Image (cartoon, rainbow, N blue to C red):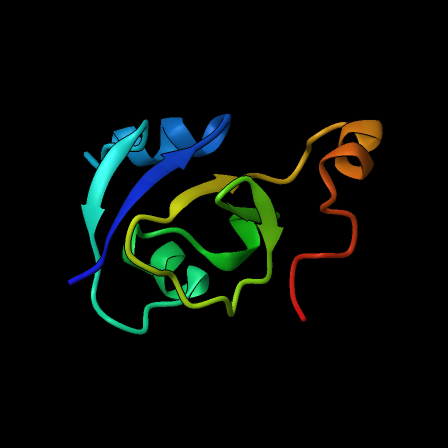
Length: 95
């Protein structure tokens, strides 16, 4: 089974901690053929609560299949405009 390193940022951390789900540099075992969107559901978040997914430091689409040893981070909506462009997730949520 693949293992990823999982992180969530900003208010997503608070939501996950309230649900008892660790979310800061957590080693997480996932099933095969799990997409980023599947992971979002697995941690009990709605897709609308996540604006961007970083996989190994790059913005990826929600349908990207996660691989063993991937580093995955969920970014909530509300990141200030200039940073959205610099980080590369303007219009990158879904393909």
